[in-house]
View 1 (cartoon, one colour):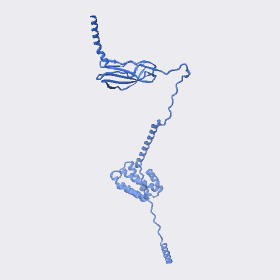
View 2: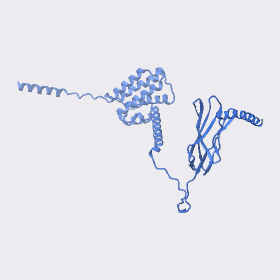
View 3: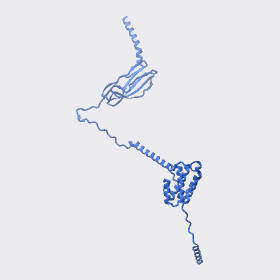
View 4: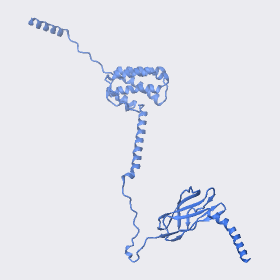
Length: 334
């Protein structure tokens, strides 16, 4: 009877233990180190592997900074899960380091499997320092100064390219502003040099401007700018001074030195003064004033163009003498 009682108690105890053992066996937690011995400041990786039944919810809390006093966590990888042999396998890596030399017994990790908690195995990490020979103190050296890195031109490429690009941008800005202020095209087009005399070329340009009827469209500034530019170019070809880069006052002074004709001076002054008022004072001239500038432009070209000298006239007596000489020569030949 006593034997049967003990046997009955054993069955009852095993019945109570079996459910817990089954739940524990359903989740396994394994921890493995890449290397168990490192030097101070070196790094090693902890590999965590969790194996459980598919469909079960598992959770394993991990520290954020320190695994334990003296062992620091550098980074955590993302968990990687896979189903192998109808089992869910989850893997995660922890990169650790230490700056204190000693033997560490790393604490076990735990995984919460629904209502149960499963702990991992423990691993040891040995952190060593560099050996120091205390028997030869002359081999101890002071801390060395900071070394300057060697000069490598490639290290300065970004700075050089940045300076070059900045200079190019500043040059382009200066060029655009200069061209716009002088009312010139942004793209300098160098066409074929005109074979026409300066006055004929300028007359053709004035005809072209007149046909465009700019001021009739309200484009007064463009109209007077094109007239003055045509005359500036004419003066440059006629008198070889750089009228394109000169102010109206400077052009008039230069014309006075080259040409003493007061009428031509007054004609050009009216054109330039009215153009300056239009460009800088936003003046809207009357139709008669616009026509006057165009008429004076034609007049100025006519007043300043080189005068054609007729061939010298042959005197009648010289002509008769030449005819007589030709006649005498022919009679002798006959």
